[in-house]
Amino acid sequence: MGMVLVGATPDIERKQRKAEYDQEYRAKNRERIRAYQRAYYKEHQARLIAKQHKYYEEHREEVLAACKAYREANHETIKERVRKYRQSERGKRARRVRDRRYEQSAKGRANARRGYTKRRQGVGAIVDFTADEWAAMLGKHDYRCAYCGEPFDLCREPTQDHIVPISKGGDHTKSNIVPACKSCNSRKNNRPVEQFLEELNASAAPR
Ligand SMILES: [Zn+2]
Image (tube, rainbow, N blue to C red; front, side, top):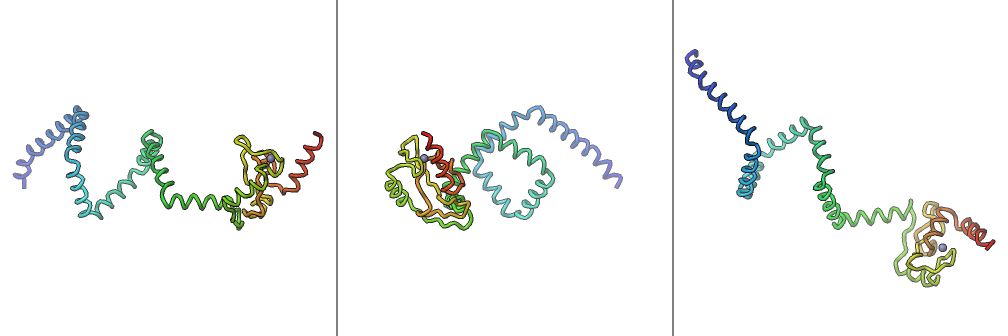
């Protein structure tokens, strides 16, 4: 037992010296080593990725457990790193690409439609008004605002005003919609139409 220890001592010392030397070397040549690693990785990328995949397949449970342990042990560090990445130009660009992809996907489009319908619907409103019906209605009103009578043009674009506001139980249907300029639409806001017309007449009377 004693013999083994005596014999092992110089070996341990030698290993320790080597470890210290290696550490010093790495600290001094950090950039060079990194550049070398990057070049090496690039050259052998396909093979290295295949190797990684194979390792993952064979050690799936272990890898997942190690990842979980790492996440749990470095929770704050990871959060901070993610935050920094999101604020970086690269992170922002990635976000834009991801958003655009989502918006163009079937799921994103369906979600947008749902949101649109829901906003218009209020609670339980009937939604039944087509683009053709809207065009016909504009023609019937001589392409003028139903309230102030001013003609629509590029500066006065027509909006769909709900005679009984959706929020007051009105429906998004032909019988509850009139073309209105933006100004009248926002002045009427969520009031019943009679109240708005009274105000409109009162303000027009002195002229
Ligand atoms: Zn108007």
